[in-house]
Image 1: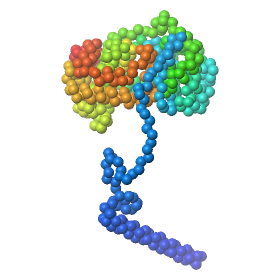
Image 2: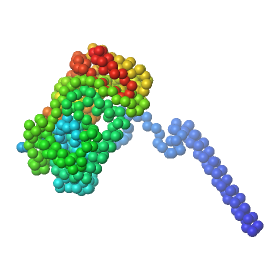
Image 3: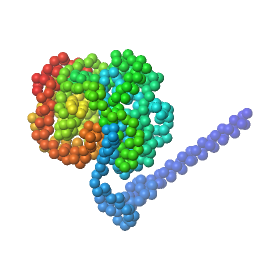
Image 4: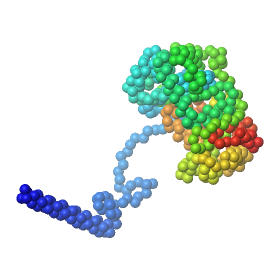
Length: 516
């Protein structure tokens, strides 16, 4: 045993000696390498890492000049289109419009846009239709729809608003026929099985609970309830006292009848971005031939008229901050073409955002709400332009969130910003910057095929055509100092609308009204 222990101890000493020798060799090698590299750097003028890694000498040719003695292979250029892509529109015999814009991309976006929303009802049907998008149809089960979409490598989505419902699918251009067939079947032929409706009804009720913990969503609902009477005051998120009282069978039947009368010819637009009109129209006409014509009397009865009233709604706190929206009526809505253009420039001039990014480059630090509000009131967490614009009216103003501080003083400062613009107290440089920012934002958004598709669908649904982008950009560039001042003056002539969450005085609305 002693002999074995002695042998083990000797082997251990030998091993430790080898490790120490190896470490010493490594240190010596590293020292020699560094010394050689430093000597080489001094003689060649190169850097330490360049010598260690064997790199080439640093290139000092500016990026604006061609590299010397470098042969570049000639690549045939692709000529730019002679004219911008054109939106083509075809109206079917049932009144449904097909609008397309061909591009050279390998992907395509398809959308079905329906002229209906929460302005038509107060029972939560719009919310439920959004939840039930791409579920069982007369021809497919929900499982089959899911598997077909996966097989196509496509993505789908839906969105429900106060005036429109959107169904969309994006995928590879070569699968446009298959994508269109799945999309149309999902929208036009829903079954609304009671068990699926029950499941989505539970999901909608969960959304209601989450709404109470989301101050921004609460404000959105509150400002519409305060500012309008009629359709636009209807809640976009279903209410428990209406949706929660219906059984699954009753709700299924109600949804089927609602789709039957609302999803009709002239109330719908099929928009496609990324495919030729001649390829889309024949297929679309076959798929959508069964959509019934729109009965104007039924449409009139379904849609509730909206009247701007102005007003105030104050809600109890939901967190440790105060939240508010101060808004005014934008008369004419999207049908007021010049006014809509001016409001786009106003958006860029007021700007705003979160205080966290107030000083960063490109974060809107030149906008008035950053420069005059966020930078001067360190207790304000967020302050930004607010707008909810619809076909014939809208709300435009300012929203903000803050912890503590003087709410009365903040409201006064925000009123001062709007008042200053109405009185033309802004520089030409501010105006030009706002117009340039607006143009940049429009062009940036239109790089997305999905946004192009949505732009086509919404415009054709409202105007019956799509205005050329170049025309809109030219209109933005024409906005003058007087146009912007007059646009804000028109806003401030309306009765204000105020929605607040937290510690606000009951006299806030009257204080704002007296200011203007």
